Structure formats: C-alpha cells, structure tokens
Image (cartoon, rainbow, N blue to C red; front, side, top):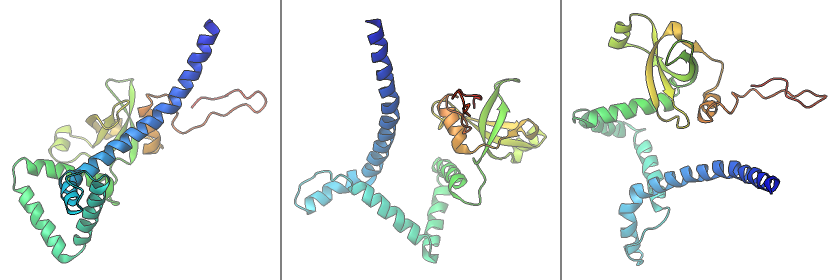
Length: 220
C-alpha cells in the first residue's frame, strides 16, 4: 500500500512539474491579452456592436487590434516633423502637471533603459555582498551613480537592482561602491532563471557526466 502511494505521489509530482510552468505561462499570456483587449475594447466594442446591429456586446480581440493599430499610428506620426512637435507639446503639458510629471518621467526613463539600443542599463549581472559581509546576492547593474548621491558617497559607485525570488519584478535599488561590485560573465537570462528558481536551476553550466558510469562529476 505504501509503495503504491509513493508511486502515485511521484507520478503526480512529475505531472505537476510539467503542468505548472505551462499553466503559469498561459495565465500570464491571458492576463496580458485581457489587459490590452480591455484597454480600448471596453469603450469601443459596444459602439461597434451597435453599428453592426449586434447590440452592445463585447467583441473579443477588437481591443488588442485597436491598441496595436493605435500604437503603430503613434509611432508613424512620431517619425515626421509635425508628429515630433505634437509629441513635444504633449510632453511639455505633462511636465508642467504636478504628480503626472513624476509618473511620466519615471516610466519614460525606465522604458528608455530597456528599449534604447544605446543604453547599457540592466544588461550586466553583478555579485554584491548583501545584507551583510560574507553573504552574496545576484543583482543587475543599472547605471553609474551620479548627482548628489554620488557626491554623498564620496567614491565611484553603481546603482544596482536587486531582484527578489520568485518574483524578480520586485526588489531593491542599492547604491554600491564600485570596489564592492563584482561583474559576472553571466547573461541576464541566466541570472533570472537562477533567481526565479531560488537557486535550483543552474546558471547555464551543464552537468558533465562520466562516460563510463554516467554519474555527474561536477555540479553547476
């Protein structure tokens, strides 16, 4: 009876290990699709439904199509002189509006750090001692510390983002002296896998198996 239970448990855990990543990926994809579909679809779908004689109904996928089209059109407008002036005027209005200014600038700079090709933010994995000496954590180098913070530190420093496990989108921003930062020869993707898995998944180095016995000789 006990052996049957162990066998059932092992098979169940195997299925769970296969199902959870698939279900999690589908959930994230579904959440993103619903968000973009509702971004414009919630407001326009009922009117389109009435025009088509279908009543005030929600048309699945219309919001995504409209969002993609609107984003493309904005990008197209931004490539000509008139569009650049219009966007510049809009940014000036945002920059003069309290609260909105802070939100807009923060989001714009954050996106620029990831999207702009000439930026080097968040593409270097570093090793720092945190929360005390002798304990090391993986972090992402954001940028060189500048301004008043750099003057207060009094030495070259780096702004680093310390992701948390298992949700790497949350974390801490730390200012670390450059002398205490160790740059690693590891891609951001490898570091994210290591952080999300809580250290279970290796950093990309595969186990080398003994040819004769098939026994792992090293661990990543």
